[in-house]
Amino acid sequence: MSGYWKALRSALLVSLVGVMTLGATPQARGQDTAGPTYEVQPGDTLASIAQQFGLSLDALQAANPGVDPAALPVGRQLVVPGFDGVAGRLMVHALEPGETLDSLSLRLGFTRESLVRLNHVVNPARLYINQSIVVTDQPDSGPALATGRVIEARAGSGWLSAASAARIHPWALAAANGLAHPWVAAPGQRLALAGGDAPLKGLPGVIDSFDITPAPAEQGQTVVLRIVSSAPISVTASLNDTAFVISHDPADPLTAYGLLGVYRLTEPNLYPLSVTITQADGSIYALTQAMPVRSGRYVVDPPLTVDPATVDPETVRPEYERVRAVVTAPPSGARLWTGLFALPSVGVIRSVFGALRSYNGGPYDSFHGGVDFSGAEDRPITAPAPGIVVMAEPLTVRGNATILDHGWGVYSGYWHQSSFQVAVGDRVETGQIIGFQGATGRVTGPHLHWEIFVGGVQVDPLEWTERAFP
Ligand SMILES: [Zn+2]
Image (cartoon, rainbow, N blue to C red; front, top):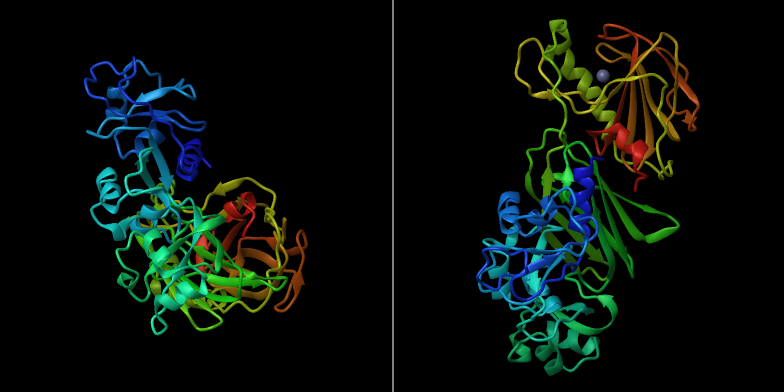
């Protein structure tokens, strides 16, 4: 991961940080109004702070002449321009899954209107997970409900019975939620209940925790959804129109894991994350929230010239469909791996995943779907993790090809082998020899091309050697 990513990630994950002082600070030359300031936190950079407050780096630097971006001390007060008329200490809250302007209003003690104004919200439906929500230390809609839980008024039974089930007087519930009368709440509306130790979130009470990482998601990487509940639930989830593969460890049935591969050529944008949670009594909670997908900063390979037959759809398509059928088969069993994947070969990595490619003068509309290890004929290929062999057969373009099923919708592929050492149905363990490098298929020399598929989508295999999933 790049330093930029780490800095951005730390900035995004910090919740409710930042300290503001009233009035202009000594370094706020040229500020004649009491503009707010921000206290630099560990991990901050000028760029991450500018992003947090929706500013350009230039605007932030112009407001803070004399601040050296390369030596930004923790605790330094920075003037934050662009918040005319705002008083008090500014703070930043990272938007959590399920949070809406209404639940934020309760949790942070600000009116919906203040949140809209402070954050220049144009469309509340476009608030995205981990978005920096700016507030001040002067709540204007009553005390914040830092802890509590959300109860939902169900259609059919009404929310008065929900209040009764929660053992709270309807009027007290109405007052806590800023409602003039208890009967103003509509069926399906979620109301907050103060108390307890758990942070108040916009999720139903059956959800103990809900994490999605990384957010923003990134082209070509793997996203993990993890939902812990206090009672049995069933979960379906998708990002845009790609479904997460949802799985459970038998030993921990109250934790649902979702894995999703972000297609490498996804346009960076906000996409709808949709999660549906069904409880044992049949009640359904549906969340739809914007989720950013950002560019993966991949390299662009020089134009490639290959045998036209290699890119001829007549040849490529049937083989692609054959591989696709194997790697999109419904998950058949348990997760077979734990921790990091190993590298399947020694040798120099000659070509990385995701590089944009143009073949024979065509457009740059394809990418390298795996990792190439420079090779030597008959160098061993070893399993990077336990798995079941689900394909071992000669293909036209990929040559002698083996695919392992690791469970939970995760597959790995090994192309261009000189010979097979395993057969369909074999169970293999980490480090076991599954084949030998070769030059079968459409290649210019011996090498191993290694791929990982998550839910049928090619992802960067090296991420699996650096980050333990799930
Ligand atoms: Zn390759």
